[in-house]
Image (cartoon, rainbow over all chains, first blue to last red; front, side, top):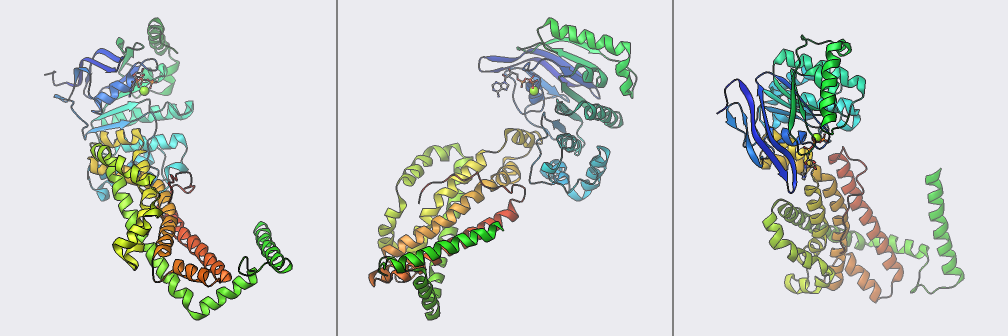
Amino acid sequence: MPPQDELIAVKGLTRRYGAVTALDHVNLTIASGALVAIVGPSGCGKSTLLRILAGLMPPTEGEAWLQGSRIEGPRRDIGVVFQTPVLFPWRSVLDNVLLPVDVQRLGRDKMRATAMNLLRMVGLEGFETHLPNQLSGGMQQRAALVRALIHDPSVLLMDEPFGALDAMTREQMNVELQRIWLERRKTIVFVTHSVGEAVFLADRVVVMSPRPGRIVDTLDIDFPRPRPLSVMNTEAFGVHVSRIREKLNATGGLE
Amino acid sequence: MRAFRRLLLMAALLGLWEAAARLLAIPAYILPPPSAVGVGLYRGFRSGIFIENIWITMLETFLGFVLGASTGFLLGTAVALSRRFEYYLYPIIIMFQAMPKVALAPLIIVWFGLDLTSKVINAGLVCFFPLMVNTIAGLRAADEDRISLMRSLAATPAQIFWMLRLPGALPSIFAGLEIAMIFALIGAIVAEFVGAQSGLGVLIQSMNFSMDVAGQFSVLFILSLIGLALNGIVTAVRRRVVFWDNNGRGHQLGGKP
Ligand SMILES: Nc1ncnc2c1ncn2[C@@H]1O[C@H](COP(=O)(O)OP(=O)(O)OP(=O)(O)O)[C@@H](O)[C@H]1O
Ligand SMILES: [Mg+2]
């Protein structure tokens, strides 16, 4: 049994796909309410780790714990944001956002107001009745974020959620995410390719090596919150970024 | 303007046909001029003989379509959802499909008699396959990420089916329905050829027997109008149901009648 203040505990986690070892004995603990970013080169097993935490896939070896019990399948109080928006084309934006409500039978009428508030918060007010293919990529991803938040999960697993957005929208979304997190104190595991994004958002940045994925470094980032975008121009920020870059380069990662 | 030119071309072709038939003095029992076909249409409708037989053939087609489409949909769903079902049944279904089903029509008549039932069953047999393959393809094509999303919400398999797989398969299912509708018409006509007391197929045969070629042409004309109308109905329903995917084509997986 892992100690209680650790919301997520991963021990000796290994995942193989046939001959390919995606994750190799990964150990990681995440405290309740933390915002942890995972960076690593493409193909190092970040999505695999997230899928295991989401209960979508069992590990080959080792174990993953959540809130004191072993992860054996999907759970209701987890919100997942994937690399792509994954909206349903036949559902309007509002209905897409209400998908978790429909699946978990939380009561549409009760949740509609919540959905509208969240949509307003991410700037999608007025688009409730639009179909996904009438939205830009960035708007779709924002709808996907709202969908992950609607059932108020205690854990958010985000797999490069803003990877497909332009730099400006992406920064806005980072600020927005920080605001949501400060307001609601969820535990967030945030996978990204962007070192800057990781340092800006996270309490802790976990650096992974190329395949087979291992954790090669962990940094605590303690800029005061809420962090303004200008924190990126400070020297301390640069120090963190270059330390992570060095780690990634030393292990043969890109960027 | 383009629509006008299209009409003009049709009129020109009809004119050419009329002129050729008259100038070359082609006998009416080989190729009647369009004017004779027009007269045949008029006579047939005035005597009420067309209306009665159109009604019968359309009823056979429609019931056959409902029978074949629902069977195709259910079998397709079972094959798409159950590995075991697929393993045991799919080879049989494929073998059955490899056989030209119109060749079954004489047997069907022997088994089910000369009236409505045999026509409905034959139409159903001919049209169930396109629906089945399109249902299978549509249900199978569900996006992996969407399935992951549903699973991450702890959705049950039934929820994944009703909320994701089935709506996602609708464009493909409607493509199958469009083919099935036309196939049902073919199946009904073939069964009428083989043995029936009424219907447009019977009409064609009796006209053929009495060398009323103009009459046969007029029935063919009616059949193509029926085909267009039936297809139009399915397309119209598709537009309303599959509102998010309005370039619906490109899904069709065929098969042969
Ligand atoms: N379903 C699968 N079948 C076989 N191999 C897989 C599968 N999914 C992932 N892999 C392999 O596992 C490794 C890790 O994949 P994963 O998707 O976790 O990487 P990632 O870190 O998320 O990469 P990216 O940053 O490009 O998204 C990859 O090398 C990939 O080849
Ligand atoms: Mg990935």
